Length: 144
Image 1 (spheres, rainbow, N blue to C red):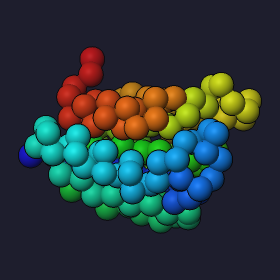
Image 2: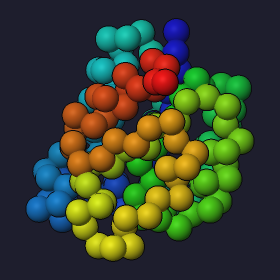
Image 3: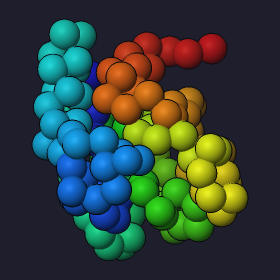
Image 4: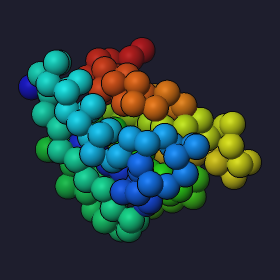
């Protein structure tokens, strides 16, 4: 059985309330539920964690080493500048899938750079909850 750590970064706890024109009306729990349902279909367990604090996310990645087979991460704004997340993900030996609800390349210029992407096996963006379904599949299936 595969084990997935689902990580969400700053402000994603406000999904469903914050900028619905960008992120829609689904809540963070709605996204977690999508991942849990998708993971159950392929026999994977999911642990989810959200924090507005970079260090807490780094520590969660550290704890995932030797415990989880994959990380699905939506780092929120930390995607664009957190070298601490970049380095922590570099120490994880499982699959890493970066996911974004919206398409950062169609938004502000600063959102077009991801320091997470170089450590990820795949990046899925702009597909809303469908992106999370695809992320589960990518997390448990080797993509070559």
